Image (cartoon, helix red, strand yellow):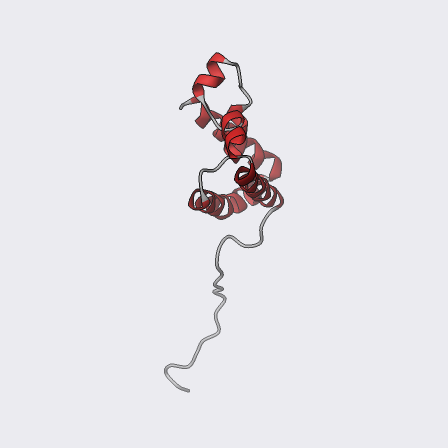
Length: 116
């Protein structure tokens, strides 16, 4: 028997967290749709849906605390955000379940908007 013969192994290699989960898929779709919409309606989308702390306080546009999560400034911005959602979101959704993952996404997103 050769000293360097391949041994059977149970180690498997894969790229990324595996198949995409339902909530992650819909979050990515929603973000991409909103990004494409900003090409056609850039000013109104950024004005009404992007986060402006002054508008939230003075005009009571509180919906901006949730809608800004889907507004992105450019191709690199959305690319890295969606990469992060895919890399970490799939694993978290599998671990916690869809409902808990979406709750976490909303709470952390709105919480970040409140701290601006």
